[in-house]
Amino acid sequence: MSAAPGRDVPGRDAPGRDVWVDATAGASGDMLLGALVGAGVPLEVIAEAVDAVTPEPVGLSVQRVVRCGLAATKVHVDVADSTHHRTWRDIRTLLTEADLEEPVRRRAVAVFHGLAVAEASVHGTEPDDVHFHEVGALDSIADVVGACAGLAHLLGDDGRLTVSTISVGSGRVRAAHGSLPVPVPAVAELLRGVPSSAGPKGSEGELCTPTGAALLTVLADAHGPQPAMVVAEIGLGAGDRDPSTHPNVVRVLAGEPKVGDGSSSTDVVLEANVDDLDPRVWPSVLAALLEEGASDAWLTPILMKKGRPAHTLSVLCRAELAPELRRTIFVQTSTIGVRQHDVLKHALPREVVTVSVGGKEIRVKAARLDGRVVTVQPEHDDVAGVAETLGRPVLDVLADATAAARRLLLPDPDAVHTYR
Image 1 (spheres, one colour):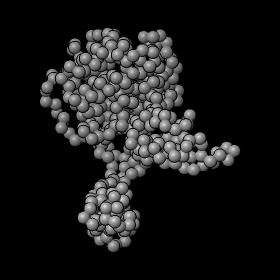
Image 2 (cartoon, helix red, strand yellow):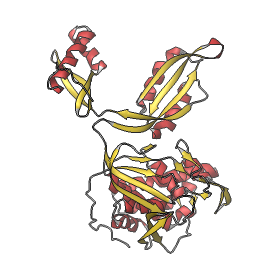
Image 3 (cartoon, one colour):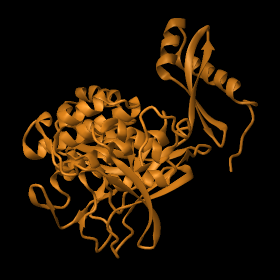
Image 4 (cartoon, helix red, strand yellow):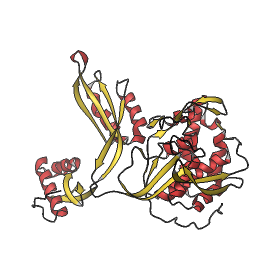
């Protein structure tokens, strides 16, 4: 099935949703295509994007199949040049010149760039000189571009993509460079800093292809279990094999993020014990980490071996920021090791309002639980600045800003609320 460029596509204006991809049985490009179609993405959306990029006709068809007892969607990609090799330059030109919607083009370029960087690292060359083998064929290009179009359709402008731990398989696999260990080197490179595992017990072979790894690592906003959401659509995308050990499917859940009592997400904590850094350096280290996107960064005094005083540096961040923040820790401190572990964070929905104290504006952050404001906290920098301008104590300005915010946000600021 194919759609002409520029054609009106049903459902294109649907509101964006959060998406969770369950890759605990592995992932490939065609499996993700099947899951996206199963989750409600019209095949025309995928076909239109593919037709805009590929220099020769590509056929797409949908088949309903069963994998280990589960009904799933199989998308077949039919092409003539399934073994043609292209360079990253060739594919970048195809994507740049194609009549693609910009969110689709941006995602596809990012995925192929990630693949090129991984392959270049593995083979000791430059990304622009990388020759894609299987990934350079039209069927793989269709997988990437089609998946990017499907995700753009579901996510809209503000949806978040969360990906589970990615199963990679075990053993060895035959590739263009001979017999390779699983995960193959390019997949292992793409999975740096990303949760992964061998997969279901008893499963052997390659569960995650380079195309699947690139799509799920480059495009993910976070990695972890399903975030709090109201699920509206579920899609299961089938792979070619039907092993007896597990359903060979990728699962996609799409829906609205759950607010009310807040949302949950799996973030990352980076930690390092440091006993030989000039303490005058720590403020600049914490500031640099926060400027680079850390949600929080702090120090905890500890005693190390032989009674040496030291600090534990802790950094809370989204999973996709961990590699860059880890690099900052190595560059700006004296540590030679950084621990990393996942944490489940529950966050209340929040808003920022502005109040006036002495004719000066102060920003106040408010958080809600079940729609009720449960905390108001004036921004300290604003409070300190207003206090200096007015010649008043910081404590007095803080009290006035808090009271003003409570009057603005609470129907009865003096009432005592009980939350159940």
